[in-house]
Length: 242
Image (cartoon, rainbow, N blue to C red; front, side):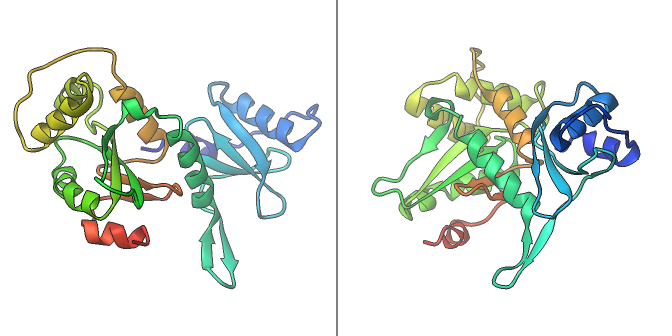
């Protein structure tokens, strides 16, 4: 889910602060003048000369001129003789996903590991009531057989007060193998005895939104690529080069 910040910049352009010395300062001052609530993670030169890449704390990427007078919200592409059309914005977002997911502790995930060597790895934002999430979960044994580790993170699509959120909080309150068992039961449509505790469900939901997740399942590869939707085990293995 993307915020309305991009639309805001498309509709309202401001003059950068004349007293600012650098392009980064001018861009930051211009955004602050428009809305002080907008937090900026970084401002760097973009691949296209004359443009600066602005990464917001919401995860959005904007492009600005060096004076901070103009902003673009969209995708920046480069034509590469070998690779064809390269989406530079998506590459930047992929890098951000890798960094953000590296901060999620193993104990806050529900991990299904292969019996033998781990040959591949996917991180999946899931909702226990999602039909295609359930279909993907049925593929986990085959994914494990192929050597692919599956890490689950919570993404209750209906938000904090949804039935899925309550179920997932119950699941994340369990420990070890029981957590995996409850997840499988919930995805099979079985009722769970409610439980409450300090848990990362809503934090992971917010993280998914920041990383561009809009639905479930949302599969993130180790290189930061985001795949929205279900794919069978054989196709995922192919995409992982297995």
